[in-house]
Length: 134
Image (tube, rainbow, N blue to C red):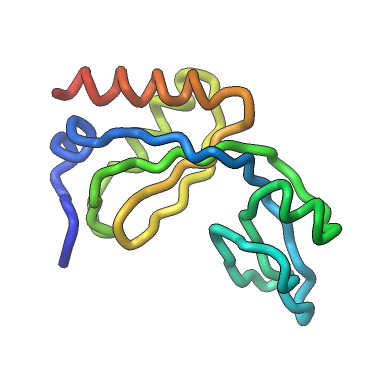
């Protein structure tokens, strides 16, 4: 097993990095291929179709309907996929600030998709959360 599991260490040691692009959530109907000219950050197969999280510019260029224009924040701490409560603490802090969040866990890092326009407030909340534990 790799990555940090201790919740206080994760919260205190994380740094949040805002990714430059605006992302959106789109879907491709079941049985239809993902367009070749898009570069999704995430592809997830669901019973109804394929969910894509991709740059807004890619979705527009491919003619995909999309929702939830958002900004991606990467948490720069190698969290274990078995870490208990990490995302719950983050989501709770963001919710207390009135922000929605769609988290995605990668092998090395967690990524947060927050509504476009609320990214600075989200970064401030995450910094305060980290400082309160440090």
